Image 1 (cartoon, helix red, strand yellow):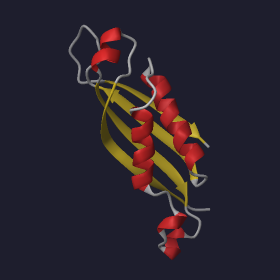
Image 2 (tube, rainbow, N blue to C red):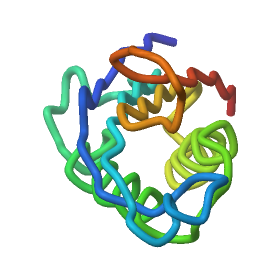
Image 3 (cartoon, helix red, strand yellow):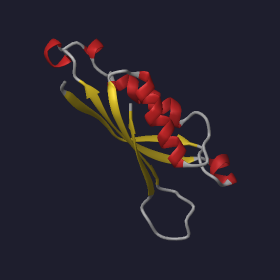
Image 4 (tube, rainbow, N blue to C red):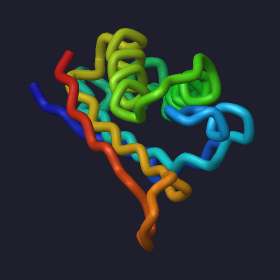
Length: 121
């Protein structure tokens, strides 16, 4: 069975995740990459959107999770996104999620902190 990948790259969300009180109160930007391995079935020949993972709807699900329930850890948040996408579509066989937090409360100079997680359906 053939598979293909759908990637959502550098999706930006404003949310209130983090361990510290100021992160919860003020919120901050998060950037998300999602790679979904999708079972091809007949879509490569049929050209029918109903037979694939609609990436617009996938984005909306990621947005709902990212801006929904507050999490202390971006590790947990990445898992929520991966598990949520895999549960949403039976065509998704594997999900890789990376979440970047550019305003991580670290006493140092860095571009961002990133967590990358892989989930197999």
